Length: 193
Ligand SMILES: [Zn+2]
Ligand SMILES: [Zn+2]
Image (tube, rainbow, N blue to C red; front, side, top):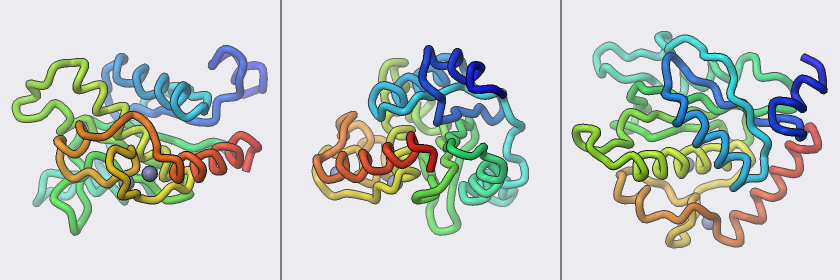
């Protein structure tokens, strides 16, 4: 891909974040994530071609997918100067956690977000709430890729969330300390590091 190709993808700026559907993911979800990464984090994002479902990460006894294994696969071929955010409809977990909404490599190249639980019981959440939750989880995981750790300031997007109630209580924004670390990571990424 040439520089001019990438320039047209994002209306001028070089895309540094790839939003990658793992299997079939609805177009609005992809667009919401790409737009939030672009506008809130200031990182030009592009939606990449779909990849297969992460079957290698399936834990049959739990009927869930090991988030760390998904990341290992996703991170394997990220182009230089980019980070990658996978979206999956499958339920993610870690060996020590019943489920996770998302997972990221700290200061790494790949993160993943699951849409599976964001609709709440029966998937009954209003669409606006569902997509707001998705944006929050995607921004949180992308910030980990930029080196931002968990935070305890009420409302900060970098607070750890284990329930939808936690996610709903967060602002779409970062406390001053997290914003500072985020800015450093953003500049490193945009500089091609
Ligand atoms: Zn986190
Ligand atoms: Zn914070």
